[in-house]
Length: 282
Image (cartoon, rainbow, N blue to C red; front, side):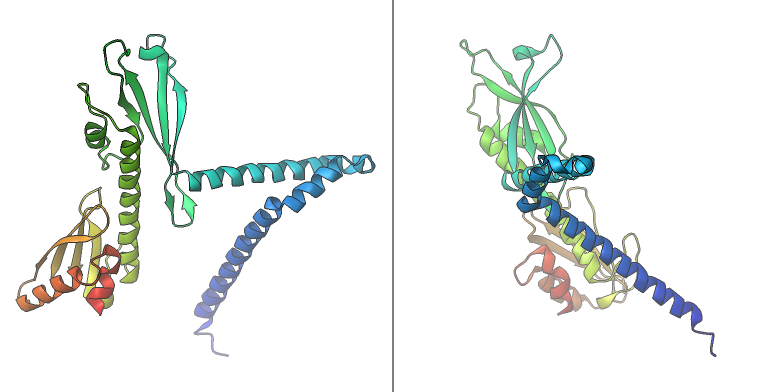
């Protein structure tokens, strides 16, 4: 019996078992959610809870009923978050010396990414002016939006002071668009790294000789790419994920004519960031 391949065979078998276990866990979670979300399940549990002949089973039935109601509430909240990208709510400032009686307007911004909802972003606004000869206006006082998204710039444009007209609805709409665009650019860069076979945090030789794909700023508006022969590319990305400008530099002894061809491929097609690798390798 040849024992030379025994370790690799065991590793393959362990990997297969782990994959099967993960698949079964995922299937169990899906079936559990489907069962708890069923209106038929809820109605049957409610009837069972009110049946006097099932008093001995009341505790398990009540526990199952509580789980079903919690799942239903969760489904309603998820549906609301998916359908309403931004919602407003009232907040009370506990400071007794706060202006306007401590009344604060809160805005909750939802961002769906892939198959999940991220933690919501919040913006708190205070009202200034008493309306007696002074125009009432809104001012951003706090927010949880990432620093790479210019809340202050949007506020200066849509919520100006000095008696100018404000547009709170457009401010929220543009702010959510900027946040969603930022997350979409992050996902696009992750997709590019996956396409060329780059592991997270690692630089390896991959398809097309690309050894690095990354960003140069937190706003994900500038992309960098590097090839094994020393060729480098800097790609300026618009807020909507389109290629705006490309600068390619070749390494020592490289063919400068390839720089122009590489630039044309990156800028070609539909010009979207998601298709950069496909256009380069075509």
